Length: 126
Image (tube, rainbow, N blue to C red):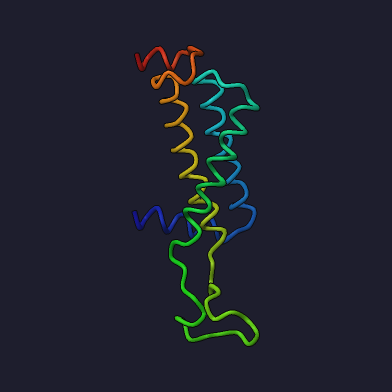
């Protein structure tokens, strides 16, 4: 996993690469939802957005060190504020997590009887 973590850190070193990674994961997930599971593009985008946003709040607190822990409190700031939040890395991790959860969710919805539309991928699961 450290090899993949190093790759995420390298991609997060560039704003453009981070944006392209986040968009790429999103398009991959939404494409799988539309082409593989028969979702409409707007439905896939809405579901992916919700999953991504919830995932962001799950990923944000991971690996955070406060300014007080690093003994480098900026004057006038809250000592509990993060010293280095690594938001680009977290955006990439969130996108990866959201892609996995999104694909699992759209694969399981028909099996749970929550979605009746049949597609090629759903027929393979039955």
